[in-house]
Amino acid sequence: MYAGVMKDNVTTRLILENVSHDYGSLAVLRNLNLAVMHGEFLVLVGPSGCGKTTLLNILSGYIKPVSGNVQINGIIRTVYQQDGLFPWLTVAENISMSLRDVKDKSLREKEVKELIALIHLEGFENHYPHQLSGGMRQRVELARVLAGDSDILLMDEPFSALDYQTRLRMRYELVRLLSKRKRTVVFVTHDIEEAAQLADRVLVLADRPAHISKELKIEAARPRNPTDDAVIEATKTILGELGLHSSVIKEL
Amino acid sequence: MAGTMSSATLPKKTTVQSATAKKSNRALSYVLPVAVLLFFVLGWWLISHFNLFPAYALPTPADVVKSFGEEITSGRLYNDVIASLWRVAVGFILSAGLGIPLGLWLGQHLHARQAFLPMLNFFRFLSPLAWIPFAILWFHIGDKPAIFLIFMATFFPLVIATMSAVSTIPAIYFRVAHDYKYKGAELLTKVTFPAVLPQIITSLRVSYGISWVVIVAAEMVGCQDGLGYGIWEARNGLRLDSAVCYMVVIGVLGMLIDRLLIQFTKLPNVRWGYER
Image 1 (cartoon, each protein chain N blue to C red):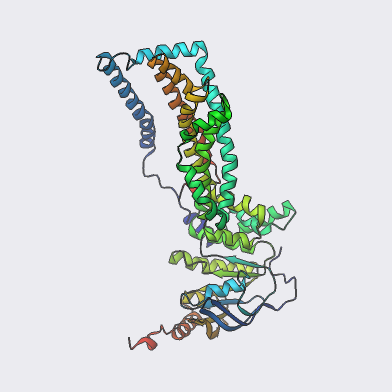
Image 2: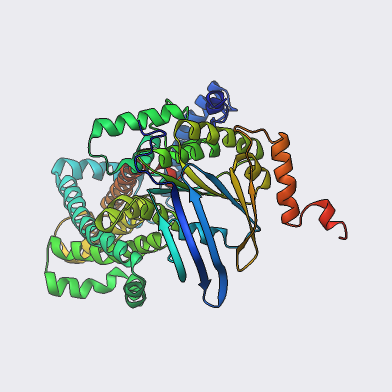
């Protein structure tokens, strides 16, 4: 119903201009400039504590930067690392949180049904989150942010609490869902392979105050395998940039 | 791919025990406590039979059964049960109705919490029995002093339990609530309250236990009927058989009502609070 429809003719979804942020005397972001295009899959990688989450909080409008401009075009939804679902609501009720503005009840139910079918959780509508596995819960989170007319998805290490194999499956799942319902994605991860497998563009963030130390475009079509040449190539580049490739850390 | 995933990753509660083993386990859960009860009564009977205590200080099981019959046929026991249940219900509903909202509010406001917590703690540690003189002076004789004492005994623990439950709600729920624009009263009823409901149910059970203990003491001083008054009267008439009969009723009723309150923990939207 909403999938792939560009209801407004914006080409740029998110713009950051000279954004800086501090926590007290701690400089977290310095003069960050960033534009995220409509339909783009942008991945931010960087060491932990480098300000990735602060950046996401600024993008979502949850915190205001100390200086600089933030422009957000469209409805933003966030997928959290874990426990983002309300445990007292069923799968269907959690998904319909996104449809609180939809007044027509039958329309709401139709949309929830469609999304549950999309994430292949038919029969689990009335289950509660604690009755599901970690992977299933994250799929419900994906369905919730895709519901209705969201435009931009912020993902804060959404698969990092899952075991490795489930994480691999979730990457394909995310690509499949986005092919059905096109969205602009800003994805934060410390998993370099994940970045290389999913991104149109990877931004490598360097340590505090965070700044973009490398920008990398990956043109290969999705879904990509972790063993595809383009993915391996991109992984090498990112590892090199982070100083984690053997050619760089020989001296240790 | 994902289709097969849903069934493969579904956490199944693996039943290692066979069906028959489970069945006999279930039977045991009834047989064992009954066996303990029978042993207890047997011990009691032996002690009274061989006069280890003087007869006036320890009634025999047979005396108690006999006085049970008398209390039931006279209708007095029935009246006392109704009177006590009514007082506990009113006092308990008053304290839950005021204490839970106050706890929710305090949990969300740091400064209010800082301001009121010492006072709440002070009253929490005051034995409700300390209020007996005031209860009688203010409310005289009847239902009111007992209800007042029950209220004083359960209100403060309930406020504090609700308040601390609210202040430990994971921040992520408020984050998500912010994303989906839950504000004001809706935030309170659709996020804060359901997030603490499992803990509220637990503290309701605990404070119900307190109120059932307090009612006996309250009725000994301020009432002309009720289970506590029954025990008081039995003591005055040196009828310990009747006192034991009332004690049995108090214990059994307390357990039964707790069984009822446990049913709340089986509501599907609070199960999460007890299973992880």
